[in-house]
Image (tube, rainbow over all chains, first blue to last red):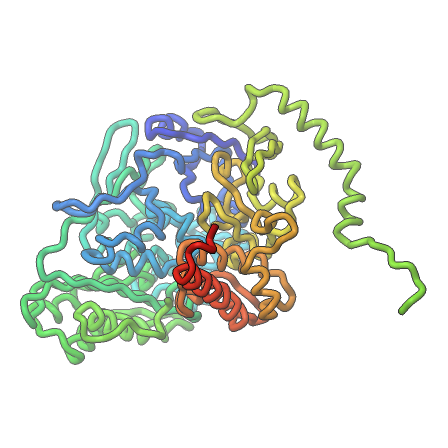
Length: 334
Length: 218
């Protein structure tokens, strides 16, 4: 790692005051240290917000779920009200990384971790995402079995945040604070596709901190689930993952949200799949049809055609899991 | 059997001895820095990038170490405090060999900065033993032969011991879930599960016996 200065902050104001001259925020530190050890980022200063107590905590109230960005993935996964009313979020937080990492990694950090692409993550490669004058995407011509299968023509990276998937399905809001004040961004607008910016993956600007995540309370009859599939049984990055929210009225699905995590450079909703489910009875046939619709228009690269099928399986099985018609898949990453 | 006198030199002992001269220099410069307490780590005060004295609470004792902010807790424990029980394998949070407890919770020493462990209770594998007495999980690992090359073992033991701290009656699925991030290339998992479940059963038996004859507790 490069040498850096370190400042331990206890309030948001202090942290904001320190965010200058290339200083970066450190919360759980998992992704940041990973990037620094590999020389991908070399910040001159770390602003430690891990001890800012106002950024901690999980409150489930009538209007919804108020999440401090320092809530750890373990805390989210173990929270009884999240397990009961926002189960896809508990599923996603509880199946990310390893138990040890979940004890350390924060929700804010999980949402803002840098993308997965082995060319981006290797200091041996320049690419257009890293700037530095290169306009290449090595994944397009090179090894791309884990890369995006949709919206991948500019840059084929994937955003690996597990929690972003259910949060997008649940219409969460991200509260962002800077010296200028606060703004609230729907998570559907939080991630920035590579066509808009190759450098920034989110709308977070320099000098801004995530100070809260709000999930509106679910309508009555809401059921949700999240599952992810990878190469290993445990501790693996997803190759395909699905977050499903269904608002049921008896047998009929009144509203549906179908979100895919690592299909594209940002987590995406599939309106096509949601249209299949909305107004329909949830059964194997409609779940399959929705899964198929979600992958319409996929543009797999030379080595990742299998992800198109894997996503259909993930979506189909997770719809049925959310509807209570199927058990958690033992072949999903647990 | 052999007439050759046994020379008690371990590889680690030799390396430690060889490093003594260099270590002395470090200690001297450390105490020089420690004299200037104003330089020490405190909230809202920028420190580094050069070495700064920090107080770490390790295995029930307070230690002052002089470290650069970029030193990980794993490096600090091993290189500055001589606590080499904590192993570093991947140094990227991918294998959990460096698992320690921070305030009683399993965490990765390789992905924690030493300076960020200030104010937290750090427990390492060395802290699990009570004097010469091994922790029940360590005893069970020996009994069940739950190690081969042994490199993942300290992290594995820390994870299993933490599981038993929070769940006195874990099932096989709980143990599997707890160690799902602890990679063992030798494949000792079945023995790790058996060892951990054995300790749990001993706990249960002891608790049951106490209900039969509570007077014995005293």
